[in-house]
Image (tube, helix red, strand yellow):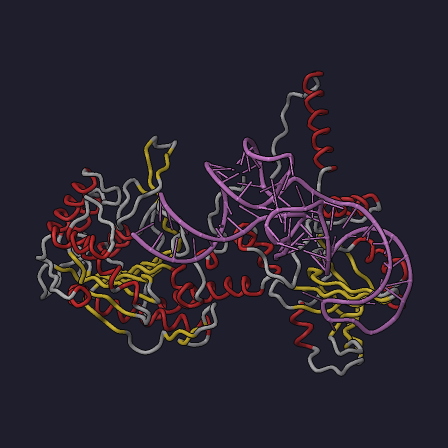
Length: 521
RNA sequence: GGGCCUCUAGCUCAACCGGCAGAGCAGCGGACUUUUAAUCCGCGGGUUGUGGGUUCGAGCCCCACGGGGCCCA
């Protein structure tokens, strides 16, 4: 985008000196470039000096590499056609003889096609220019007949070629991978050299498309609710804080869309979903990213049982749409079965079994803290009895769940937005879906009694005042919406990145195209 | 937050007990009209992540810091 140039000309000797010094420094920097980068810059300049544009606005292209492959499958070795095509692609592999050069071109979808340049067909000048100017990584365009080489490789035999984009940096060795650091820092390189990296992007897009299709078939509306919020609510998490210049107030990047989606349900939007980013100012590891894609959906007149069914349907349909089966192949080569109905178990009974003694919502905090100590779970002084139950359960049971499992009926204190259980006192109608030992989704029968909701949020606010920096503040506008009345409803939150992890067996940073990484030194 | 592993040429990696920093690919120059990680001849390419320390001598040992990965909390 062109900037308006400054109106004051920099003609003072001082400014000129500064400009000269900057130029000298830039020159020095160029000279200190590694040889391979310098050589490519020199080639670019040589092209310009010869009147050849290294970055033309457009180049001839009448067919993608895949289209050429499709239209000419099954030619015999040595067979030539009269079909002339113009193709373009990145040079990923080169072989040359004196009067004949071969290059492998790669298209954006990973399709490759061989290009041949023979002295007889392309001419002396164009062949010499090819050898002098083209490096691995350049994008080029070529026009010529489709033929099958003597060794049986489908090829375009060039009658002319032109530079499409001169690459100034060499590609990594094609037949090794990229290092883990290059993968996350330079995904653009990773995508060129590693087919698996391209596949993840496509799988992710297919999954999201499938989710949208499923929602569409259920008459759900897709909404977009605020990412910049004046209060952070809807989850137990530390928010990122930012500042609005226009309003001169602190704002939070959202930790969850929940409180706004529920306002929408109050307004009569009975079936709504949102797929968008959440931000949590917490640790980053192989299953947590500070920004992550979240799906939340709410349905009036549904409860947590129906929402569990909806969730299973969404995931199994996404698996079939994105990878072709509910039995998925993981990155380590093992298979994982997401098909059929999934196990359901209840938190307090399974924890009681694991500990060998009955644990109920009435079990005193002191006993739970002692059991945490015994099994090596760290206890924060501010943690409630319910929090300790969850910690113990995760440690003793959750981490070991391999097959997809719904864990039901959570402690009340840790679930301030969930309705109390219809028959079991002291617990709420909430489930977590565990897949391969991690939490993939959570579902509620949503709390809609505004008086109880106020009590729960005020209890949260007291925890916050006592130092719990994950506690929610009281959101008066949300409570006002609840007072207007939300129909009975079920709701679910599911991490999109985690869903990709479940379908592929990859770490979260491999499922996110451009994950947040620390700046290079 | 804690533990373990890792950082060497553009890329992927070597370098024995602390003793002249190397290979393949890539690059540069040359030969070659059917190659498929072509082949053959020749050449260049390094602040060993950063800063300290020990030592006659440090890529290697010690300390601190930074980046990445894995495991745990």
